[in-house]
Structure formats: structure tokens, C-alpha cells
Length: 278
Ligand code: SAM
Image (cartoon, rainbow, N blue to C red; front, side, top):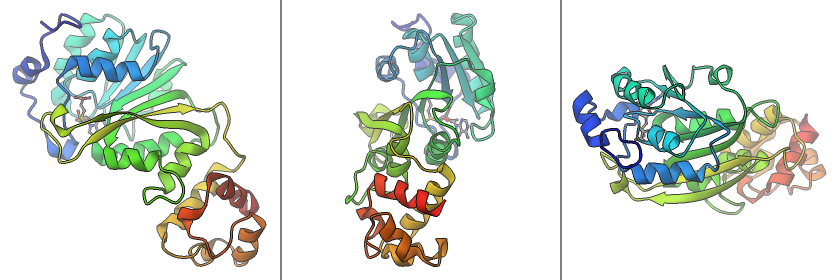
């Protein structure tokens, strides 16, 4: 029995259900329930929230979220082998855990939740960045979710919180900082996971701002930033030539020297350029 919920320890759950980790599914499990409860606490008060969890696996973080008082957890898991273990957790928390078997890239979770909604996940590394970009890119703001508490490889976490002028600065930092407050909340060594990955990991906390920091059309901003950082070593007048024939004039009208490179340009200037191009 484990201290936080009276259910069996995760090692026993994994043995009982034959959940050997599969690399192709990005399976690096956290077995320490004190640690998963700590991650759940980073997300803030969960008692009045529905939580969406991507990739519950054997359920370590799911148990942390429920033990920390989440009103309801909707857990989306691709690996059918994990379902019996998750059903045991659902039975221990009647009416509070909904298990959805499927690919998080395809499941319409927004239709299954009641706001306020927090997304909390130890993301599979192979789809983590794509999910984050989608969550950061809705046309309307504020989004359905009010916060994201996400485990990434440390290098990806650093890209999310990077500032202009740094090597890690790029599309993820611009998208995250435009409409969220983002910070690294916890750093974890490889040994925190079973099996241990090759690199360190980190939990990033992103809180949705009530409105974007600067006005811009999301689709145009996304296009500008993607084009600028796709050729990050080139001067912007060359990297962005495909966006408008008179790009030099537009850059100057947006307060950006055409000879600058993408990593020199701050959020406010990118938004000004997106407005100019809209
Ligand atoms: N939450 C568990 C933990 O912290 O121990 C497991 C985390 S593990 C890093 C990632 C989980 O995501 C695995 O259980 C894996 O099967 C699941 N997964 C991988 N790809 C997925 C996808 N496209 N949609 C939903 N779940 C996925």
C-alpha cells in the first residue's frame, strides 16, 4: 500500500500488468508518488478544476493529481496495456477519473471538460512539442485551459523560456511568451524515471494571460516566426523575402533593422511585423 492513496506501489502495478516501458511511446515512468504529488502541486489549486492529463501510463502522476484534490481528471492514454491499471485508480476515486484510450493528437478533450481546466502531463518526448504548439496556437484567447504544467527534456524547457539573443530563443519562446507567463518550475535528473532517459528533464509552468501581451493575428505571427527562425542565421530581409516583396520596408516600419537575425528580435517587434503583414 502506498502512503498517498492506499493503492499498491507503482512497481507492483507495473509488474502485475506487465507494463514494460516501450521506447516508441516515449515511456519513461515516474514511480515515486511523493514526486508526482509535488508535480501536481506546481499546477496550483486543483480542487475546483478539471485536469487533462496526456499519457498517464501506469498512473503515477494521475494518482498525484487525484490525491492533491483534482475535481476530475481526464486521462488520455494511447497504450491499451495501461487501461486495467488506470481502471483500478478510477475505482479508488469514484466519479473523478475518466480514462480515454486514444492518441492525444486526435482526441477532442475540450468537449469532455468543464472549465476551469488545467493541463498537467509528463509528456511523451515524441509528441510533446507538437502538443505544446497546438495548445499555444488557438485563434481565440484566452484558451479553454488556464494553465499547462508539462514535463519536457530540459533542453526543450529552456527553449520555451528563452530570451532574445540566446541560442535557445526561437519559435517556442515567442509563442509561449506572447500569451503566457512561462517558467521552469522543477528540474529532474534521469534517475527520477524508469527507465532513465539520456538527458535531464524539467517541468515548465505556463499560465495563460487574460490577453496577448501585444496585438497580432495568431496565424500571421506563427508564419512570420516560423519563416524567421527556419533560417535563423540569415538576415531577416533574406529569411522573410517570401512573405512580401517589400519586406525591407515592412521590417523598417515595424522597428526592425532588415539586417537583424531572428534571434535579435523581441516579441513586441515580431507582433508589430505580423500586424504590418496582416
Ligand atoms: N504519466 C506517466 C508517468 O509520469 O510516469 C507516464 C509518462 S510517459 C513519459 C508518456 C506516456 O504517454 C506513456 O504512458 C505513453 O504510452 C503515452 N503516450 C505516448 N504517445 C501518446 C499519444 N500520442 N497520446 C496519448 N498518450 C501517449
